[in-house]
Image 1 (cartoon, rainbow, N blue to C red):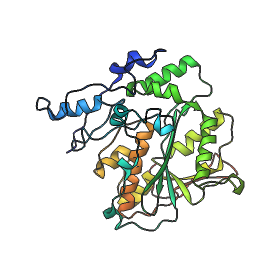
Image 2 (image 1 turned 90 degrees about the vertical axis):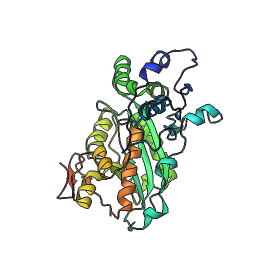
Image 3 (image 1 turned 135 degrees about the horizontal axis):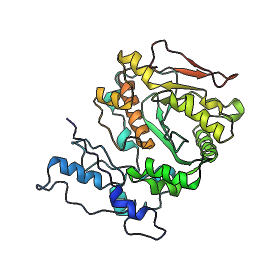
Length: 326
């Protein structure tokens, strides 16, 4: 059975995150801890120590305690300046492949798909979008290809409200400093995302703006049915055509395994996939959804679009599965 530990590092970092002056203790700092192999530490305390060694709380599997590392959230946005810092590299991962590597044995039941690439997306932010993470998975062999990750600065909220909002959302995860350092407006996020898609030949604006043999994969309909159109309206832009259809993994799961899963955590529990990282940190949730997706591909699932938005009436969405999560 996996040993689970949830420890907030907020108390450790709170006095340093908003300081305008350099500090010896920052989200990139190294905090000395007792050895994880010390006989004086119980199994539970070893997991706790492992959590305290990261910049965010983590759910650690007993078999990987002491080896799993959280992603550097500057690196995921192309802004890490500590790639030559040995302590930083020892503390933070800079490689998604560590957690998303598909093994040769998992390809035995893999079936041909009508798509080449799967873009796993899990937005964060209820009032406005705060985080926009995407992981690109090869549908033919389940390999991780690339990632796109940006923190998003709200368009209409006051600075005081933003501070309170981020404190409540990311402060408890100990990553509010990274958010304030890197967040950019939603319009800029979409511009950079489109450049990223062009680089991977996923999208050509001049050809109608639809995805090219790729589809978004979400855990539910909320991200693309509700939140993207809401944010586009707030940001005073039209909803881009590449957001017109998607795959709701909940509906695929229901029809493939013949059992209902209301969310990512249920899927992971039923499939016995240990959670990595912090729940409700978008990039970690996206990675865990991608791991569920890889498992389902390995089990032989065939993916299909589950929902389409009407091009003539973008507010209207057609759900393509009769048996679906409502």
